[in-house]
Every structure is written in structure tokens, then in C-alpha cells.
Length: 467
Ligand code: ATP
Ligand code: MG
Image (cartoon, rainbow, N blue to C red; front, side, top):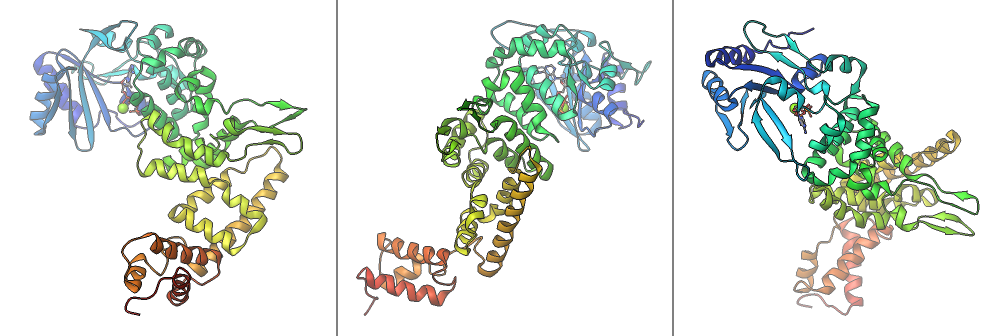
């Protein structure tokens, strides 16, 4: 195995620690990732003594700046693509109503006890006498080997001290494809309510890492089963369950959503497309309706769902700009490609291309991922239809170039021709031209659009400037 302490930085830290007569260790994620053979550029150094002083010494040897966080007693420096954090070893105790701990100086062992999981509590010594030796008081190495997430202390204590650790447990399970030890998982179920005291930003950071996993559903199933999902993302938890009327049940929307999410994740790393997959059917619970003739319907769930997106993004403190608008748009349009199956007209295809714009390929990817069924025949049938729509879109796009379509007659041209200020009539004429092109009544070109402009203006009783 590669020497984990090869980067020169470790020797330098070791020497400076000896000079100050303090003990220093590499701890946490870097040690874990070394054994997992995962690349890691975040290095945490724990010091039995003052972390900021040691960081300053190291920084001056390296001729870089150390950023000191005096309130926390920590320091950070960057060197050759590595981010190195120094903290003094701590002994912590928490009060029950907050996650702000009472902190005292401690030994590396005290510090290992306040770590979240056994696999994150291992340390390499940087002392000259036993340089590189592993300190692993909770058998983290075994748990790494068995692929188990376990807390160093009684999980009830670990999780109530900092309830974010419950979501971190699930995040590591999803990200590393590990299982959570039973005792720990039972404790998460018991303590799920305590997640309420954790800031949304910290929760969302972990959610994003679950989302970025190879199979995000693994994380969401655990969030659901633990009871955490109902607290942090109740809209998604509500997808769960099947109601039966007159012997008819509907599709179980949570497991369907999980399947779609994993399908999308297998095709793209685009995190926002993954969010669109998670939320594509979010309007279903509130639009669910049973009709004696047609059975279960979810009419308008695409529209209702898209309306819910800004609220969900705000609640999760996700960005409200382009990312939110993109997810909202995909949720709103997610039924449209399949709806075209029954009527693959040029104009239907043109309208979809126009509304989806640049995001048409992502929409098609989502739509393809949305084809799930226990019956392989059904899946094959829908995929066949989907291919038809796909082909049609490509044909129409090649012919009409609608994707980033701007009508060939602009508002400016209309205003200039008729000597009009910006007004309602300009909009009416412009829209009329756009609609005619999308409907295929005229071609997407200047000449035909100009003729139509004149015709529409005449109908509205507008005459040309100077005429
Ligand atoms: P990654 O950086 O890959 O997401 P990581 O394990 O390095 O994973 P960080 O959040 O960077 O995670 O934390 C670094 C180390 O600090 C962890 O390995 C763990 O030992 C400790 N740690 C982080 N957050 C907590 C917490 N909430 N409770 C206890 N220990 C924590
Ligand atoms: Mg890290």
C-alpha cells in the first residue's frame, strides 16, 4: 500500500511538533481514505497542545499563510493542493438543548472519543519515536474491512451530542456503500427528532453528498426508514405508501422515485438533474384522486409539483437562481415527451423544443429514467414509444432549429416599422408570429414572418410609419 505519510508536509509537522514538545497526529478522513484507497486532499492534524501555534510554525517553514480561527482554536493552511487543518485535541461535553459543546483541552484519545464513527477515529502518529504508527482504539480498521458504520461510544450519546451525525451515518453508508450497525441504526430511529436542533446548512451539505453517491437511493431509503426524511424532507416522505380503492392500488411513488433517481444517477453526475429526479413526482400526493371509471389519477401533478420547487429549495437553503429554475422547469415538463407519443406532430415537437430550450437533452434523460415497471414488456413498450418521440425531436430540430428559437421578427423591428413605442400591440404581433411558427403555419424565416406581421398589424388597425 502507498505510504500515507509520503507528502513532505507530514515530516515538517512532525519536526515542528517535536521542537515545541507537543504530540501531533493525522486523524479522521485522511486516515480512513488511505485504507479505502480513495484520494483525499483534506488533512486533519490533531495536536495535544495549541493547534494554532503549531500551524503558524509549519506555515512559516512552508512560507505560506495560516488562517487562524481564534474562536475555535483551529487553523488552516493550503499547500500544494492540500488543505491542512490543525486542531487542539479536545474533550467535549454537550448540553441537551444545543450542539454547542463545552470544550476542554484533552489527549488524542479524548479527541478520538468525540469523533462520529470508528472509521473516522483512526490516527497516525507523527512522533519521531513511532512515526506512522496507527492509533485505532475502536477497531475502525475492522469496521472498514466489514464495511460497517459504528459509533465509538454508545450511539445514543454520540447522536444526541451532535444529531447531525445521524445524517452523516447515512451519508457515509450511501457514499462508501457501507451498512449501518444495527445498534447505531436503532439509536438513529429513537433520536431522529433531535435533528431539529441542527442547522439546515449542515444538513443540506450531507444531503448533497448523498445525492452525489453512485446510488443515492441507498441514502434516501435509510433516511425514510430512520424517520429522518419525514422531518427534513416531508414532501418526499409523503410519496410513500399505496392507497387502495375498490381493490385498485396505485403505483408506490416513493420506490418509483428511488428507481428514477438511481436511473438518472447512473447516467449523469449533474446533481441538479438528480434533484429533478427526486422531486419529479412531488406533486402526486396532493393531486391523487380515485375515479370510478378511470381508477387512480394524479392530474396536474407536474404543474403542482413545479410550483412546490421554490419552497422546497428555500427550506433546504439550496440556491434559488438558475439551479432552482432548472429543476422547476424539468419537473413541470417531465410528462411532455411521453404525452407526445399519441400525437407526434411537428408542432408538438416544436413546442416542446421551444419550452425546454437548452435543457431538452436533460429532460429526455429524465423522461427515459422515469420509465419504470415491474413488467419488462411494459418497459420495452414505453421505451419504444420514447424512441419515436426522440427521433421526431431530432428531425424537427434539424429542420427548424427551434431549441434556442428567437422569432425572426423582433419587437424592435415591429416598433420601427409602425413607429410605435413599447406597447401591448407590439407584444400581440410578436406572439402571433411566434405561435404561427411553432404551429408550423409559417416557416421559421424572415420573409414569411414579415408577411404575417403586416397581416396582423392590418387586422389590429395599425398602419406603417409614414404611410
Ligand atoms: P469527507 O471530507 O470525505 O466528506 P470526512 O470524514 O473527512 O469526509 P469531514 O466533515 O471533512 O468528513 O470531517 C473530518 C473528520 O472530522 C471526520 O473524519 C471525523 O473524524 C470528524 N468529524 C466531522 N464531523 C463530525 C461530527 N459532526 N461529529 C464528530 N466528528 C466529526
Ligand atoms: Mg474531509
